[in-house]
Length: 617
Image (cartoon, rainbow, N blue to C red; front, side, top):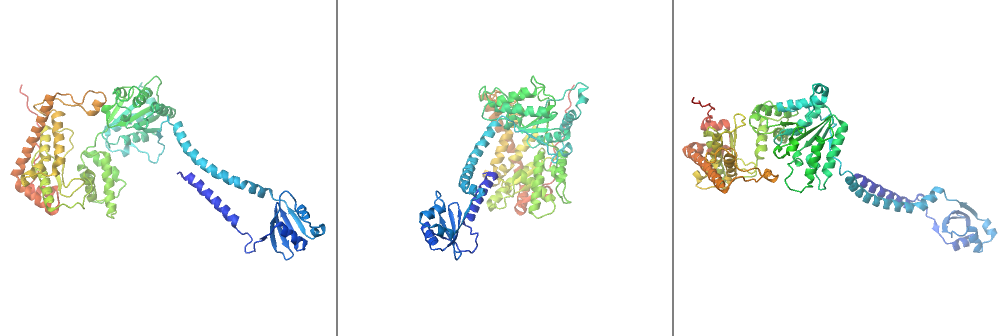
């Protein structure tokens, strides 16, 4: 129930309570209450000469005797007091001895006495009726505004974001900087015959700052900024989404020059013609209206449409053609320098200890997006506050990385001695195999402290950011992934369920190597299979190969996994002494950092540098 309705109920209860209080309140204080008598008793007292005065107010009689004692009586409204007393045989001489005063009731008291019961009834009935109408009015208001867009216009300058507050993404800021210039100085471009872009599509993985970048464009251009989610257009009723699109662009044209930002546009912009929903599919109707508004018969001057998606591959081709989304800006995961710059921005509002090294934190977070880095800084601040510290130290930051990646420490999850030993050999197997293979990333930490669903973990981090991965890297990574599985088999002669996640990762890696990256000599340089989403949206079947090829894919995956398994087994058997050293250290300290790990095994083997093979003339 809403606060206004509650206030009305409270007010009614207060009025009723006051009425009860005043109706029973004795204004006379300690004065004795008058005695009620009948007309016959009054006649007897008048005839006996005991009555001194009678005050008549309406039908009420206020009687005083010679001793100033008060009595109350009521007469019939049809007759006056004189008529009643005369009818009872009271003589004129007896009436002259009584001082009879007739008081006319005031207009206000008469009105209140007559209307108060009716007014109370009307108030109670009106309150009940108001509640019902309020409920119905809410539904009616929704019905009347059903076709209006719920786009919000950013007018809060206090939370304004500029490019200076967005770290990294240099090329993206350069592309979007031209949009800002278009909005600020359109004449500069119009004089050269250049037309303002109609649409800008921001693409990139989740958390890379697409929405933040759109806010920065709005802050830099200082123009009206309408933002709405793609899912807000779609309703179960046909035509509502298209109506909301028309309403949104009508508002934008009035505020031009301005920016319209549609977040997660793939909710309505997926490829048409999939056959799902028939010819009157609401999503397709909405998309058609967006296409017309962006580039149709009517000019759309001064309105730039920005959209964000992490699935550009499923968008309709008509949405991506020139004249609609003229520019496509990709925001990728940040590299080492960009991660350090992002961490500095999020650390600006947090007190940091002198030992904090943000570059080291950036080195430990490869592949993380801006949202992940913000989460790490926030988690570190929470850990510092929990420890009653005034500053966030390097310890909290390193702890926050592992918490974000793997989950919090499960200190209450105490393993038995046997499970603890198995976990130690499992993680030592990963670490030793990864350390001794040249194409694996450096091992930075090994632990048998449970985090999330893992009983232990081995953290390996690349020494530099890499966009491309070779076949040798895949083969060595596969061997490292299976290192724990092999160690359990070699040491205990049995397997546990602790390797299930490793087997899932290894299987997925082998399938990608064979079917997606063309790294199988048997199957050759081609891909096998399409994304399921592509099949759903009318791009053919997900499986584009025969049963014979399917058998070859399975056979090749088994071969790749068997080779990796054999490579890991050879390392575990050959370096059993080092493996036992690592296990002993883990059972004692539970965690081994990179420096201590390399002191036990020596420095890692560096990967060979890429060389260019000479071509014979």
